Structure formats: C-alpha cells, structure tokens
Image (cartoon, rainbow, N blue to C red):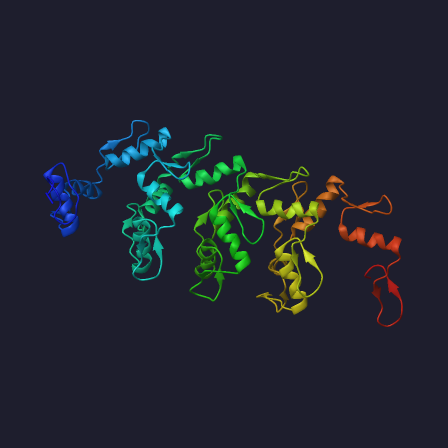
Length: 439
C-alpha cells in the first residue's frame, strides 16, 4: 500500500504539514522537548510551553471587549465571550441541548451512551471525561495543585480555585435577567432562576418531594437512608452535611470566625451572624401568607405556619404527644428519661433545657437583660417583659371561650376556666379538701 504524504508510521493518520506530523509523533513516543525554565514541567509543543509560562508570569494578554476580564489563552477568551453572547455552537445530535464548549458536548454525549471510558486503577470507579478522572485521582493522592495567591488555601480543581478567588474579590459575574441579583457561580444562578420559574427538577424516589437543586435532593435522601457521611475526628458524632460538621468542629475549638461589625459579638456560623444582625436592623424578611406577622428567620416562619395548619411533625415514641418543634420533642423526651443535662456551676440544680439553665443563672447573677422601653423596669426573662408590656398597652390576648373575659397571661386564663369547669386540681395531702389554685 502506497504511503500518503506526511503519514504517521505508528498509526494511519496523515497531515497536511510535516511540522504537524512531527508534533503528532510525540503522542506515540512521549517526547516533550520544550521544558519550562522555572519549574520541571515539559511539553510536546512550543505553544503549550508559552501558555504554561503565563501561569508563572501571570500574563493575560487576551482581554474581553465587553467586560474588563483578561485571559492567558485566546481559547479561554473565546469561551468567555459566549457568556456575554449566549452562543452555544456545539449542539447535541440526540437531544436539543447545546453547549458553549466542545468538551462539555463530549461529556454530555456520554449521558446518552452511558460510556465511561476513563477507569481508575486504584478503585473501581469510571468516568465519562478525562478531567473528571484526573480530579478523582487526587482524592487518592491528596494532590491540590491549584493554590490561591491571596491566602494559603489549595484546591484539587482549577474551577474550585476560580470560585474561591471570588470570595476575596467579591466578583459576581453571573447576573439574573429577571431581577438584579448577581452570583459568583453559574450553578448558583441556575438554581436562583428556579425561584422565578418555580421549577423543581430533582425529585425524591422515596417520597414525592422535589427540589430546585441537586445538592438539596442529596441531603434530603439522607433523611430516608439515615446516612451521615461526615464524621467528627474529635468525638463520635456524624453529620449528613459537610457544613454541619464544620460548624460542629467549632464546638471543640471554640472558634467564632464571624464577627458583628455593630457590637463585639462573634459567631461560629455565618447564618448565626446574619440572624444576629437583624436584631440591630429590625429586619424581618420572612412574612406569613396567612396573617401579617413577619419573622427574622425562615425557621421561625416555618414553626409559626404550623400554628395555622396545626401540623405537629415531631411525635414522641413513648407517648402519643406530638410537637411543632424538634427542640420541644427533645425537651419532652427528658420527662420520660428524667435526664437533666444542663447543670448550674454555682449550685447543684440541673435542668432539662439549656434555656431553663440560662434563666436560672440569672437568679445568681441578678442579671435582667430585658428592659421595658416605656418605663425603667427590667426583667430576667423575655416572657416576663412581654407580660409586663401588656400593662402599658392594655393588650389581653387570652380570651375565655365560655364568657367574654380576656387576660394578659395564659396562666390567668387557665385559672379562670376552672370557675366554669369546677376543676380543683390541687389536693391537700392531709385532708380531702381540693383547690382550683395553688395556695
């Protein structure tokens, strides 16, 4: 058989230029004649070395004419421009999906074929793309080659480093075209858009619940399986979410990295700081759609809604009682077990709830942190302040369903009801006499 011009003597591939053949042959021989004079890395093409050197110099000669972003390679600029134009020139020939990068199309095609050509030689896992395979290998080696030049943090993926850098720069290049909100990652924008469309494409195969983000579905599934893949290396506790483990570790270290810029208070979790800041601003962004009440946290709104629906999703496994809050169930269970884990360090008294211990400690310290904004009176408990304020406002929210009488305290209503029922729950242990009120 006659040999073609510039044909590879290893395989059947032919090239229009001899230089292209020379470069191609190196894929067979493994030759990498272009060495970096800064690090030990070598390359099979001079153009690859030129691009690599920019990782050392930081040079980014390719600038976007729409925004101020610059890139070290022309191909990266071309891909970036499509973010502005919306161009997706690589269509899938099986479905209607299109992509801005050819590599993304190649990876997508594997979802149709099920092909995973890249197998790990350490474990049995296979991957549809070489980049996924390379990233996976680092879970075995622990390699994190992408280092942040601002802090000391390193990453196994360049994409993770790019996202991380935005925590320093504050850059949010992905803007919602419905509202003005911007995001640091494209995936966060995609998830956010679903708040406008109401789309929840990730459905649980155990129950009927659907989610707008795949991560939310993954976390939800663990509620069914009981899986807690994030163990604490200090104690035996495990968690279903990595974020919960990070927050938990701080109970051991005492670290509180989130500081309030108004007062000196610090917090172990950013969400706790966000909630705390609302005590300064008075912001209550979570409004009930049944009544006009607003709340500073989404959890408070969820709990409040149960007052309207009557939902009590936390049942006791000892008795028939159910609760609207998980914390109330935990406290209730201690009534069965007799457990009192919160001990006072001044006296020997113990309590079933941490809140009860906090209130008790004030009997020793004399602290009264709840001050009335009408008069100068202060109280050791917030509930006492709430009751006291009604003396100024005249509010009596507890109404008798038998007569028209109203009361400022729930306890007063309970006592009053006994005048209708004749109930006398307080019995003398010496004689047979009973009373409607404790003497």
